Length: 337
Ligand SMILES: *Cc1c(COP(=O)(O)O)cnc(C)c1O
Image (cartoon, rainbow, N blue to C red; front, side, top):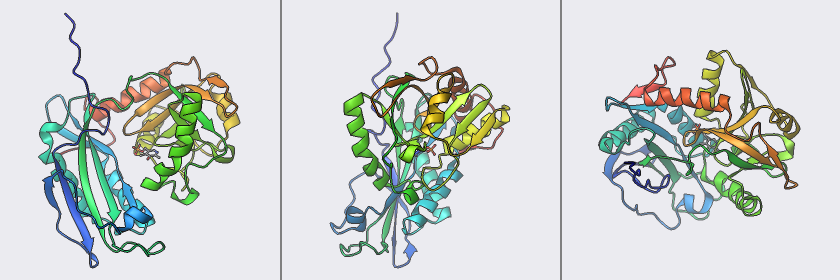
């Protein structure tokens, strides 16, 4: 007899019961506390509501076969949140306090960490609460930091089916100097072009290549792959410096791959995908294979065989094995919590 797996809620729609919250005022962070997830009071003139002073993080805690819980590269995500805060002129979360808030949130929601392929997705969010609608060019001197957790299963409903990606060779995803900040406004900026392309070309995501230079999609980094070789854009302020990207490149180098990080254009990408692979990387998707690129003139370009390629599958499996604790973590990326 076959059993049907229970229906899984869509990514991000369900939160674990407890969250941690702290507020910043008068030049200092106040005490953090754990509370049940519930609406928060906020002044209608709060800075974030008018001037988008907000940033967030996303990373995962995994349940191993022995039921212990391990978080993946939490130090990198904490550092990135602090950097985002700094670049947005928001009060920077205290490192020790932020770490405690994350650890306590995981601990309180321990029973809600799913088994693989699920995980507990951690979502710290920081936003400006200074009540002043005249502060368009003034930083918020008050802020709230909340750590949310969400049990997640499959990000891409339909699992590992090859993605259909629209190549936007004109428009920018966001302002050039804010691309490396995980801030709400960037997603707002990408929303219009993404929805328009979805409607017109039935695509899953848009790959932004302003002035023909390949960057990333709305919420994931972009990699070109073939056996023994990876090409991806070198780090600059125009795109998000993914922890998954860094992990995959580090693993590939250790496996003997040539890893090229440099600027490249749409023409070179089109040449690569005649025989090579393309994939999106991020915490939620891990590494998701691209099957088709849709050019701005509406024509489809098949990526390799049109299926998720073998190099993509191999690297994805190797990273997932470290995250789930089924392969040894020789990089020191996982931390038992
Ligand atoms: C979060 C995010 C990524 C992926 O970053 P990871 O650290 O790998 O999860 C890539 N691009 C954008 C725009 C993102 O918001």
